[in-house]
View (cartoon, rainbow, N blue to C red):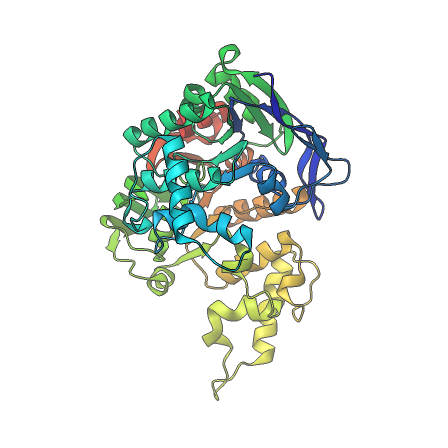
Length: 496
């Protein structure tokens, strides 16, 4: 592994005031499978986008590809220099054939104005022979299994004569047998001298296929380690090893009264046999890696999706949550992870957003919005939640991330729910705003509300939750009282 395919130095990326990457640097060699690991939010996706030219790094970055040096790459330059990527969702065209999916991007790049179907089919066959895979190039992609679609995605990347192949969570949709076949393909490509950056949360697979592992934590480079010199425990400790001070959440406000119970909740492809209870005054944290099924469970409880089987009980009574209207009638409110796309109407005012869930209460006799009533609701929650600036008429999209999140929570509280489900409550907001959101959730629990908090941030889960459920691949794999859990214990249940 002496031939360096790509070397990174001083790679930083700042979004507004948030440092997503901070002075990252490492190299990847020909014939090497180099794993990239880190918790959710560690900067892995941002780094991939810098490598592929989607993001421009901050000033001072250096990207060396072979003998050439760049301060940044454009997407076209990245492709021409042999950097190819396959994403978790494959990004393929199900209505096109295998050959079309593999070759169409290279045909478009030629920009001749005429597509050569024979050349596309020949290119597809050539790259599949190189990978030693047997798939009919004329088969419609949508008819293939997830495993074969993954191989087609890799073939499409290789048709550009790739020197570095980035595989982003390549096994997320594959069975154990399909993973074995994929790893056989990866091993063939490694022997042919291809450099592979393997991005995964699955530590057992990382140790099985990789030569070296690079760990990122909070956007910072922690180190690069040959797999023979470290253990899974070593990597987990490096992934979560930041020093974070937080107060453990006590359970003195948790009552015996059960607000919500789910029994055997199952939805094929999302989660299976989910069982838990939520008590009055309790904050129940649900954590795990992206794709573990956390959000999907909560969406079914609220009525966004329908489970295939299982039972839901509210205050001891079995209920059918057929849609979100029914979820709201049962006293459930849901704060989605993507507040801008799913939680706010960003072009509307703060007061419009705060009143939208209780619109019937602000209508006058002519069924028109009473501006004074709407303003009164807005002023109440602006004050209670300490939204800044305290301007009901301000466009919601102009607020900071933390204040936007408070508005989304406010519009849920306006419904006077007994159960609040909040997905990634502090995603993308600053430390000060996080603290205020945490204080708000604890205050709501003290008032008797039952709260389900989905979060990828382990310090947040440990400091805000009374009890913690860990999910992995659609199953609950661990349960802890907050005062008894450590980050390492939770990561073990989430990964191993």
